[in-house]
Image (cartoon, rainbow, N blue to C red):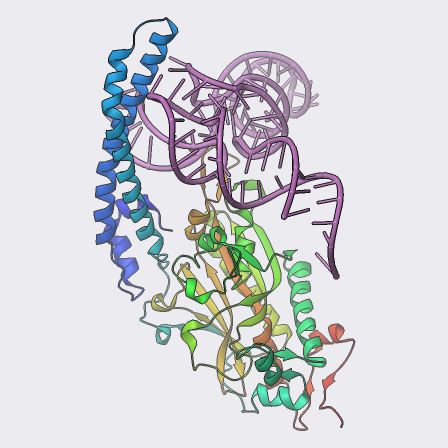
Length: 427
RNA sequence: GGAAGGGUGGCAGAGCGGUUGAAUGCAACGGUCUUGAAAACCGUCGAUGGGCGACCAUCCGUGGGUUCAAAUCCCACCCCUUCCGCCA
C-alpha cells in the first residue's frame, strides 16, 4: 500500500512512477474519492464533536438532578443526521481504501525503465561471462527414464501440473531442501521456520496477493483459508500488526514449504515437466529490516540465493527486472535465471524483491527506534533461495552424463548418503 | 464436536453506563545522585487521521444493536486457554 502522505505531497512524481510500470494506473479516481471522503469526514467529525459536547452536558445536569430536556431535544435532531453522515463517510472511505489497495508499489529510482521482460538487464553471470552451453535432453524425459519423475500417475490422482517424485527423485528433493536450509541457517544467519501451508485473508492481503490476485490462489471450500502460493506469506506475516523494537532488526527467516498456485493465466505454457506446477517446493528467504538498510539487504539476500546455485555448480545469471516487469508489491527485484541445457535457455529459479514499506503498510508492521518513541513502517524483503523443483530440473539437465545417468553435485552427496549417481533402474 | 473461562496500551493487569484514552506494575526514555554503573528518587511515556496551532475525531478481538451517552449492557461471529470426546 502506498503512503497517503507521499501521494498528497508529490502527486506528479507518484503518477510518473506508477506509469513507468506500463499498466494504466491512474491517480484521478483516487483524488476524486479522497476529496469526497475528506469533505464527509470534516462534516462527520463536526457532528461528533457536538454530540460529545451535548452528552457531557446531559451527564452533568443529570448528576446534579437538573432538567436536560433542551439538550435531549437537540440530540434527537442531531442523532439521525450524524448516523447518516457517518454511513456516507464509511462508504467513501471503503471506496478510497479499495482504490488505494489496487495500486501497485512504486518502482525504485534505480530500476531500469522498460515495458516488459525485454527491458530487463543482466547484471552478472556465473561462471563469469557464461552465456550458453551445449544442449541436452529435457528433464522430463530424463526423469521418466530414470524412474524418478512420474507425471502420468499424478495426472490420474489429481490432474495436470502435478508430479509424483519417486525413489532417488524424492530423495533428491529432500537433499536439495536440506542442503539449502543448512546453508542459510549455518552460514547466512537465518532462523529456520516451518510455517503453516494455509493462510487467512488478512495475511494474503498483507503481502499483496489479495484482493487483486485471488484467481491465482487455491481456496478451501468450507473454511476461509487459502493454500499459500509462497512461504513469503506466512513468514512476512509473522510480524503483521506488530510494533517491532529496532534492536530486534533485521529479522531473517528461511523456510521450506510446498507452494500452491492455480496458474490461471498460464494455460498452454510449460505444460510438460516440472517447470510450472500447481504444487512445488521452495526454500524461501525473508528479511524484516530498518528502512535505511533494506537496499543493502536486497543485495545480501540475492547473494545468498546465488550461493545455492554456485554450490550446486549450476550456471546462472542475475537479472535486474525493469519497471514494466516488476511484481505488484515489489519496488526492486533481481531474478536468478539458471541455465537449462534441455531447453537451451535460462529460466527463473529465484526472484528476490525489496517491497520497501509497501507490505509493512498493509500489514501495519512498524518499528520503534531505540532513540525515539515514534514508530514508522519497517521494510520487508523476500526471495527464493531457491525453487526446489526447478533446481531439480537444473541438476537433471546440467549433470546428465552421456550414458544416461545423472551425477549428483558434490554439495548434495552428504544429503544423499554419499550417493554419486542416479542410474536407470535395472530391469 | 461438547463444557467453562478469557480477548484492554511494548508486556502484565485493573476498569464492567457518564471528563476513562483508560488505574497500577514492568519495560522504555529524560533527569538528579555516582569516577562509572547499579540502586533510589523526580519526570515523560499508546496508535491513527485532521488542523500552522490551542485543539478535534477515531480506536479497549470483529461486526451489528440498545442508549442522550458504551471498554462497560444485548446479539452474532472470530481467536486464545483449560477440561471432555475424536485424532497423526
